[in-house]
Structures are given as C-alpha cells and as structure tokens.
Image 1 (cartoon, rainbow, N blue to C red):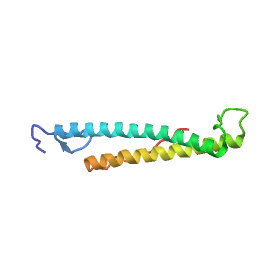
Image 2 (cartoon, rainbow, N blue to C red):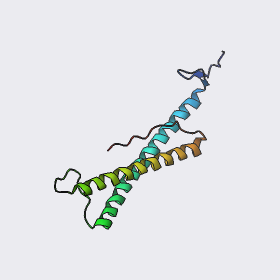
Image 3 (cartoon, rainbow, N blue to C red):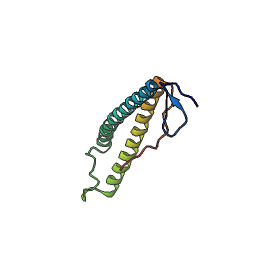
Length: 119
C-alpha cells in the first residue's frame, strides 16, 4: 500500500488517516468528554438537590445519614435507594445528552461504554 507523504496509519489498524483529520478527531473527543463531564456534574448536583427537597416535602424532615445509628433502618434504606436510583438516572441522561451533542456536531456515533454507578 502506497501512502501520500501527508498520510499516516492509525495505530493497530490498517486505516490511513490524514494528520489534520486525526487532530480534529482528538479535539472533538476532548470537547465531547468535557461536555459530558460538565453535564454529568450539573445533573448530579441538581439531582441531589431535587432528591433532598423531595424527601423534605414528603417526610417533613431532613434526609437521614445512612450511617447514623439513631436513624431508622427503613428511612436510611429508602434514602440510599432513592439516591442511588436518582443519581443513576442522572448519569444516563447526562451521557445521552453528551452523546447526542457529539452526534449532532460530527455525525459519528460515540463508542458505547458502560456507565459505572458508585454507591
């Protein structure tokens, strides 16, 4: 295979890529990661505030600290469960918003990845 002087090979593949296309893809990837991270952070903060306000509205009390020995087991487990579900949903929404932005800007679908939820 003969390549023009301005063409390089993508590592571990046999696909030729022009340097300007490669640097453009890298910058788009960085923008996508930054956009998704920002969306994830905003979604997490907003979700936590919404969950706390919802707990106060429903129970009339502050959310329990799950490790507080004086908090009831039921309240601690419900708070932990609602927080986990709410934050998992927020992460999925943030990832989808970031991926939609990338697709609209580039026309390329992002690589699928697993969303890791840490409790």
